[in-house]
Image (cartoon, rainbow, N blue to C red):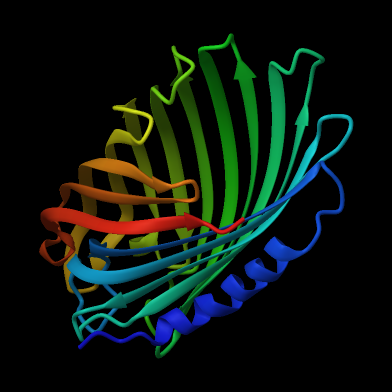
Length: 309
């Protein structure tokens, strides 16, 4: 049975965004945007997010609401504030509907007169709630340094610190401290939307219990090709190797190790000046030496997104 209680939590953000969208802008340097997307997708669900103790793929109706306000100063710096809500209603009763709310603030400043170097600070606080329980609260603070080599090439380096406060009723000892370092290079050879990017990263998470602490290395790649003024196709591939610190359980001496590979192709089609339709299909596989944490299967989805302001 499909539940829709999680979607109620997106209404407040959507209404707030509507008010901001119709409100007069403070000046020409201030811009407010409100985006809304609805989709039906087949998504990976991790153990502990429902009554099942296995990881698997499940069908879900998804709503994503994004309200953002950006202000650019006369010196070229940018302040940004936003609220994002992602609500997921699952078709299966073994997974609880949930909604995650993110409160976002950032500050970006150019470091030279040619605008080749830019520095950005960002803070994000997230609250994830199922229809029954709070899942987690998480705070992340990050810094990013960007260098624009020329019109075609851009490199970004990012360092992010975080802390996750997990609901102990779901996972006892899962509170985590996070450290992420990554570097991304992006190539845009033309004036159109063609783009190639690649990212490599390393991350560590230290939990109260060693069985939930891990080190991870991974990579992501994206290729976006415009087929026309209205249509573009995007391919994405991601990979990571995740090795945990402690034994998986007191009854199992195994130290968990996961290898995940996922890829999909997505088509976006512009429907009007402020809306587009999209569809994607791909494969998601997580190979683990702990059987209950392994899954693989097709991922897919289709939906519509709108810019309200």
